[in-house]
Amino acid sequence: MLIGRKERLKNVEIFHRVKKAVIQKMMPPNAMPVSALSKETGVSDVTLYKWRKEYRDKGIAVPGDDSRPDSWSAQDKLAVVIQTAGLK
Image (cartoon, rainbow, N blue to C red; front, top):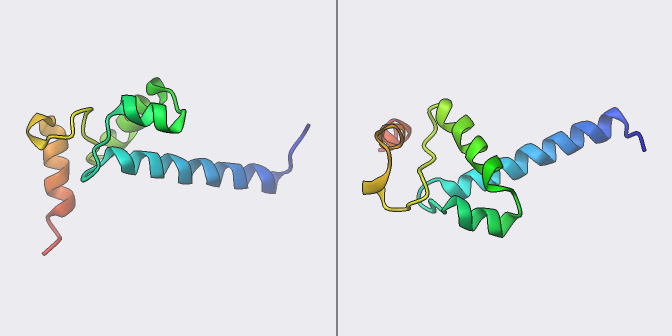
């Protein structure tokens, strides 16, 4: 079955919304582990790691699988500092 342009655009928009919501769950203060998020959402862990890498490459803090900040990578710690620097 072929779908029209409007439907494809709507599907892409929904995909990006879902992806953003899932990534948000990996970010502070949630910092949900990829394994738990995969079980909750049904998105494969490989896909979640890929999405996390895409966001990290943009300089957005998406910590690892451990929710304790002292175990985050230096890259993630720096990204959190940069993201929150303007909050006063």
